Amino acid sequence: MTTAELTAATDALIAVAQDPDSEEAAGQEAARAFIEAARHAGVDASNAAILRLSRHFDIEHGGRAAFLALVCGALVEQGCDPDAMAAPMTRRLESLLKSAADLADACRERMPEPDNESDEEETDPQEVFEKTREELSATMQKEAAAWDALETFWRPAIAVYSKSDEARDAARPLRADALRLADWHEAGHWLQQILAVRTNEPILVIEPETQKGILGSITGVVDNFQLNTLIMDAFPRSGLLKLRRVPKRVADIARGDGPQQSNDTVQAVWNLYTWEAIDGQGRLPDLQDDNVSQHWIWNEGIPDDIPCLDGRRVILLGPPSYPRFWQAQRMFAHLRARLDVEHVMSKEEVADWLKVMATAKTG
Image (cartoon, rainbow, N blue to C red):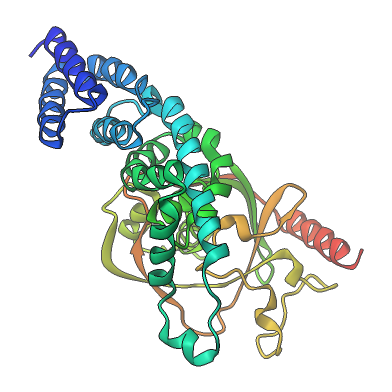
């Protein structure tokens, strides 16, 4: 197939999307023809076609716009340029998220409170929410249409924000509306997670007991399970053999270089602490302390939860209080992550940083 044939397939797909009387079968057929033409026309021609299609993400019918985005997202996952569709997709997604989140807020306000603890245990909040949403959809038609369109639209958004750090960074302000939806709509659930992911986020990692430390940055890290794995792989090791803390295949999964998951089980080497855990002598709390977990960094959290000091997320490494295990996996298949070590600190530099923390805590 030639570029001309891809242009014709693109025209046909746009025409079907814009025709209010076209049926789903016609859209599916036009999409198949488009993707087949793109496969033979090459990446540059496909990127140009994606750019053309993305100009129609603003058509009035949100479901049809979402369908065009889904077709473009399929090509992005196959290697096309995510930035060819990123800006118009984010603009339409912003509108859809706000409208759908307004509907979610209205539902929450109308949902009845349980009369007693017994009612609360027997009532499924999701069922109550869905019933309330159905009732409100009759009077909030724009918001209801946005809710339905998001059922499809979030998927190509994940494809784009996984492949393009720049697009994800630009869309980050949309996370507030995604969070309003997160408990009730899978679009909100997945989008709030990927839009929390930072690019080139400065970090400081210190193991006070050994006086080792690194300055660096993280990109593409979704949760602290993944961060913990990357630290175990990158943090300086001692001894002549310098054995790996995690197998290379496990580190590859965390970085996005391998499969999305494996049957490997990862065991934590450390407890992770925030910088507020340090005492006046630059030490971490005793594991027998009743409040030892007060400043733990939980694997279930995200890097955004980790407090900063002097513009860096600070992670302190202490001995594990009990065995912790998790499966080797990453949340988003096509999102690559990395921990870049900029500088391995001397013991003197580590001591200076620990003094800064102790001073900041008491000051």
